[in-house]
Length: 462
Image (cartoon, rainbow, N blue to C red; front, side):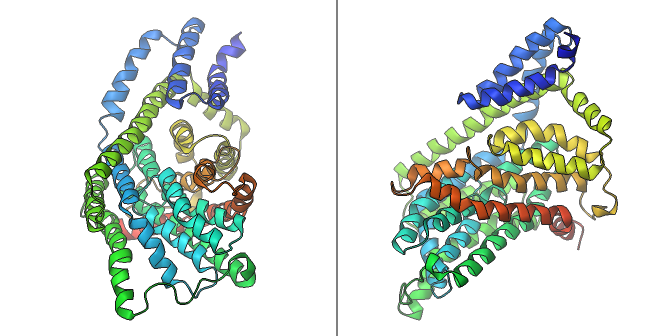
């Protein structure tokens, strides 16, 4: 019995892992497990039920008062409005015209569109569904290999989890109490690195295996130079301008991320008006979908706050620290084990559960590790090891959307794809892109400057 009491936090974590497979809403699972183990802890004498009264104070005095989290509703609104405005459809066509003579031009266009849309919205589900509906039928009609088409779309659609403004990065920065602007700047280079790896892979593959990606017609698109530039002004420049307004205002210090989120939401409304899609019905639909998404996220915040409080009160964090100290493992061994654990959790859980439960427990441990001169000090960047670890976890979580059996991007795609698209084709298509993500993660581990140089340059005066 004493052994069970001592390891009650681990039993709590195991119960969470099992119940997440039940399909019950995550917010209720987190809150229910917290209540159950609070009662068990009270019976075991390691927890007092009166401590539960502190949870509302943590929720309403911490999570709900965080000014950083105010950005989430506005970024959600911006992404949803861009989906309804038709801007992505026009952007894809413009990119197709620009790359029509390049091997694999259509796949490269999808990758570029995913990168650009990632910099305007942090909503993965909407991005994957939107790109699938627009690009997959076109790629199938062009004779593209099904695994290549599905893998390209799924990987490109998930770039929004890493490239700012990402809702996940907002949540991570709030959990670890680090400046969200610094996190946005630090995530930009790794995000563009993954996009570049996708682009180079597709370019080389389609160059040497053209049968996988038949070329597009040379005469597609505008027939005159005037029509071409008119298309660029109408379809390509507006999303780029919106990116400059949102990210530029953050990186140059003109606005906080919360203020930039408001700029982005207003800019998406102007873009919808520019495309003549700003109708009352569309506006109401965008508001409803944004409200449902935000309500789901904040419901999980409440449950995760209760879970983390009870877990720590039962001695869970101390138990993990004692276990790591007992192993006498070096900092690199600990880091690799933690990243491998996040990678494996991504096969079964969504990024929300992994972020809200694992990150607050492991990040303080990593912050105490000594990596010597490998990370070192960077001008303008406070807590560089924490920032570096946060971005490593973010890059790692890219795979959680693509790895079966619970890769949510794969489910989003299968749900809206034509009936002839098999789930086996989707699974086969994502394999090389998961490998590219793992390679990108290894580069960020081996070269911390990929993460820390740009924030140091922007915040430390170069």
